[in-house]
Length: 202
Image (tube, rainbow, N blue to C red; front, side, top):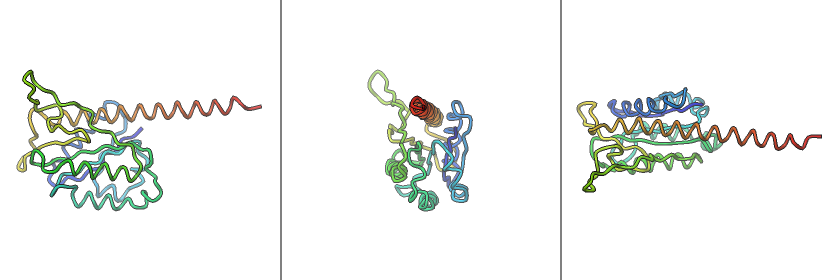
């Protein structure tokens, strides 16, 4: 069982988020691998072996980075053969502003997964509110549902308090748990079909 996180990080911020997602995923899945987009382009077979792929990019000018787009376009042959069909997918993005069109980045990532016929995992973490109905800073302080959004400053690797990175870790754990569920279900279904066919042997 393997989860591979494919990311581009221009200044190191998105890498930090990717590492926190990996920490969360490793609580449930034994094999979690971090791969940059450049590394992924050189070894696309590694991605094909994964049960779940997590895509991460900073939001630059309202969409994914050029490096991430290069990776997307490098998967053309995989798309043509639908080699990632029914694999699980999820996405995350980081920028230095509260919104900064991060939703468009997540939409781009989810459409990329959809074109590969993958099954998308949304964030699945509800924002919390105080007694007056004001949204608290976390979990899911960005109020995102399609995937994970995080906020960091430009100068230092400091993230939106009190810790967008806790949400990243929780997201990684969720991805891993769903991956385990899917693998367990698929194994049980395959086993059931096997026994069904063998029950008719003469």
